[in-house]
Length: 358
Image 1 (spheres, rainbow, N blue to C red):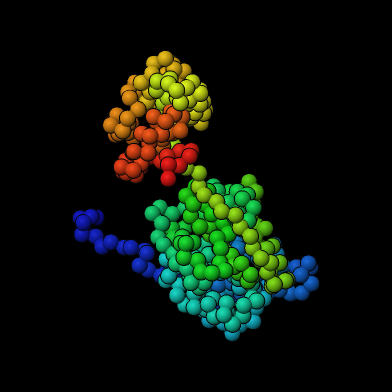
Image 2 (cartoon, rainbow, N blue to C red):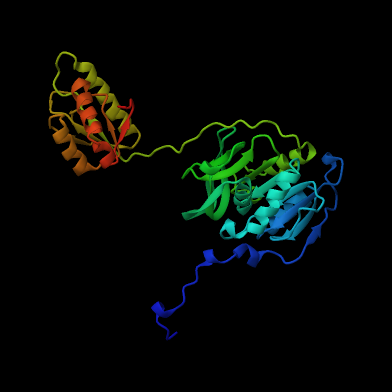
């Protein structure tokens, strides 16, 4: 058109209640053709529609044989009768769903044995109801190939995701623990109560992204409905592996008493290990008569004294991600200690690898 781009109004979708826009406006009931025989009774699940995928409804009704009542995002279900509460996926900022959060809080307080299962936005709503906080991600996690680690087993699953907000798991209150974590960026992928039948995940288990599907979480939900008394949850810590592009190795220097050939050997093995890992090695070693400085060993060699002055110059030029200080004898260790105390490693964001100086 004829309107200049700088004159067009800017639309920020984060300022709108997107869940309210996509949620159904009235309650709907879905009944299975055949109830789940394993449950020995008709199970009723109330699903809060914050933008629920039809495939979730199909999975609950046709796949699991459950009677499902789907209600609008702001529907007050606190006095309704149901066996389990399902919090659906949906777009936008979870704090916009304040009414849903308050209703979930009520159920958690007054009906603590009622199982709750959340997916995607439902994970964030459950976290807010528990007392945690959420935040806007820079890019979000989107796609069919997001790796997620189950903190109970350390098993990794490939999942489908499409979200721009996440749970700040550092704000989880007592008795709540992270259930899943993203193996790429370490963001939260699920939470669970340590003793109540309440849990949620950030991804879509009904999507069956493979290679090992996570639809077992729905069966986990059914187990809670059949036996609401939850067992104690035990999780193991997980941290995203650090990736190093270039590592600086402080060499053995001259072969003297206390700095014999074993340091040349160990340093050579460190350089070979870096090469096998695809990490570029930068060596500082003034001694040309060593295995470390042989052609084809390190990717780059500086025949300079292993002193703070020269090491800082190499760091400024090469910008390494990490440094090995334990393969150069006492000279390299003394140099590394001085650099650490002077704040050089922190200044240039260089991680000390192996035995830590502090």
